[in-house]
Picture: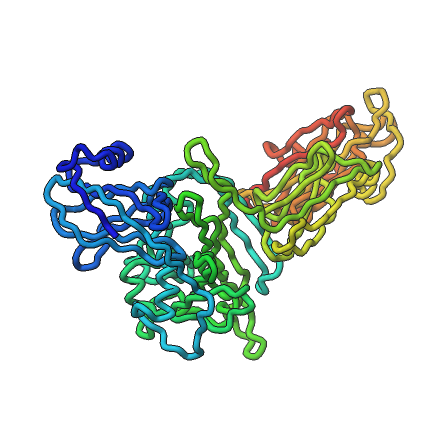
Length: 594
């Protein structure tokens, strides 16, 4: 039902004046203003999508109604138009056609009848034809229409950039079975972009494909609302109701797949809708038509996009992820020749933490899977200031005053959890990690507690049980005690830990009298992590340190006879003195290219 009025012809109408005052004036042009009201009570309907439609049925403008039901649209020029109001879960409302002339302003009250749309009871038939742009009245058309409403609102929200987002961007590397997280890198960002999740333009994706594979690296893209609504996508994909989804909590699945003649990298997937509210909840998809071996396709490359409506009718994407493969090389067990292997599964994930509209927070995201617990000291008291972390960068928390911690936004995999503390870090001592399996569906976090070792236990461990030597007379007089512990961390020019590098250490003269100068000469090799540790060095006494790369040969006789390392390695020696009050020192060295 429609009641059109030209406000320029009826300036005395109270309703028209109220509507004009309530919605800001537009620029020069043909303006259509109005209010969407409930036929039963006449109250305004907010959060509905109102579209201006021309005679050919093409939508040429759309907007969401305010909480009061008010809306405003601008026609591109004079002509005949009608209005269409879409609410998810209800039948659409169409006005009669009305004429708009140059510089005209129409004021329209659009009355919506209460006609709930139910998706309950819709059943799929196995083998039912997959339809491109399904005809009105078919079950698949009913489901697509409700999905379309949500996608249109999400695309409208995206185009207008209404919000500021706080979010986590997470990149995970899983093992080749997709069960264990080997590395997780996190980045917290605040963005004022139109949306935290956006795809490439639809025409580019449909022409060039949703993935690009190369020896240098592969790139994958997922669809956003604009892509799924585009003519190019609808013309190249067909839809059907997905059968047998009782295990999905009675969700209705609208499945799509590319037409058989599509030869570029494509996606096939399912939009899942709640049958009671008819709201779109998420999109699951997977990649097809990839020029990749069957071994790589075992990674099940694909993704998920979740949708959420806000109270004002706008829609956002609160969470999404892409699942991709990383190729490697292995020997074929039959031929013995190199063949393509699945090295790892890479997942790129985005999680919206909060959505801001001005000074207000209009959405807070779920914390996902969680691991919570306490780091205790040797007296069973919570240890504050400990760092609990996952393999990678950015995935860490610091324990509170009671030693408590919580890791959030975890997925359904097995994680390796570490902890450390400043008193452990100064000795480069890392307690053993714990593996934890996370189930995000659990209401409570997985519980994990750590008991930190005492300093004496750490010293005994890092020094391999060696006893601290007795004080030694110095050549210049006095006594040298040896509580010093030196950790040498060695890297190459790129900062990568250097294994099997030779570390040489020489002290000043230690003992007075007797043959020789009694200098301590120490030689060792770095571990796989580029570390070499020596315990019970004298404090308050200069030490010379030099590192040799694995290709350099050491003249051991010259090393034993030298009075200073600087004589053997001029310009390369680092000098360090370990202070009595700070007996645990670290020296960072970089090896020269060999």
